[in-house]
Length: 331
Image 1: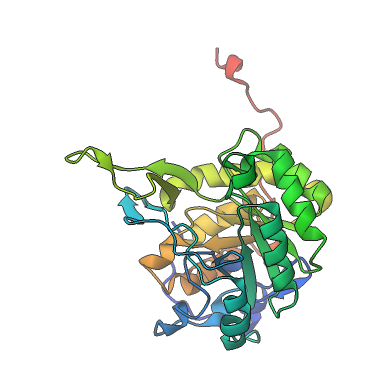
Image 2: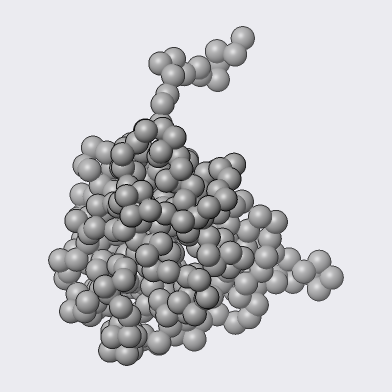
């Protein structure tokens, strides 16, 4: 693990953290993930937190109309992670645009809207509403059930994913980020189809589906039976998915927000080396709200030790041996 005793960063070192993401200049490669910091105002209440430590904030998932979310229980702690089944509780896009966005300071950091929907028409309407707002970019959460197609998640089918991206692309000129689901057959094929449909970037990955059972009651603990698994437990899976998607993205110069279980600078560095341009921090913020400054300091330390002038030199820098043994070569 990378140990950091002093989290103070000089302006010269801080400049090494700057990232270009879809034409947006980010002051840090760290992105606070959707659902973990509400609509951007909650985390600022933490004493010692500074927006200078982050490159962007991804706001809570937003739908066309207000949603109350799922029945309790909604959150359950698991070994090395947590299950959540919030159900996209939100006040609706009109309230977010008219009452929440005006209260955010867009001079301090970048803000990314998270668009969710049950139909393609809903994705279109919410994206169009955010187009006429100060939001810096739009993330499409395609891991929502597609009501018109029998409840199948858009993000698990490349055709459906591409249709959502293409539809949103027509109504917004803002950078479009597609959040990819790990719960599918080929994340590479899905990524390629989304690029062809017009996405500008990817967030890799969304949560994995899981459940928990109360053995005394013999009943599901989550009110929705299943929920999304996040936290350190999913990091190895997320890391592989970032590497796989990067093999497609590098052909088109498409950036990736690598996310899934990042809780240290070492974790963040792994995702960058695997192919991420920026890294998302989420579940770890619940037990260490000031984690971002520690991650930034660890990245700076690594850059200085390896004589790297800027962070972009790390993206996709994974070194592979010339000969990679197949399963049949062990004998």
